[in-house]
Length: 101
Image (cartoon, rainbow, N blue to C red):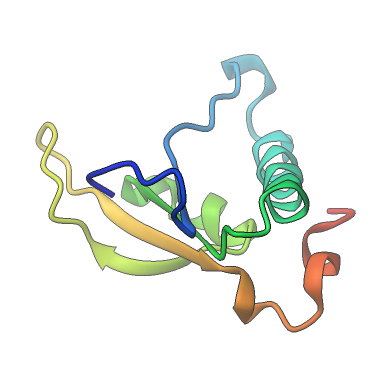
């Protein structure tokens, strides 16, 4: 996740932001799933999405289909950053897994 390759097959997700008054309502999960579907439809060269998050957000991203890889080598502040990954090829049923939740 250290450089940009416009022809690459990996997309790094940098932020998912939801206003405080709208949190804990499933909005972030719906946004993520819609974005994942959009990427699959509009950017067929992308086969993997990756992101870094803090421990308290792992469940959110797991709910959108990402799997925990483990601690990242990235250092920013005092907290440990965790790397997560979503491989589109792991989804046997195509786009259906991310629609309608």
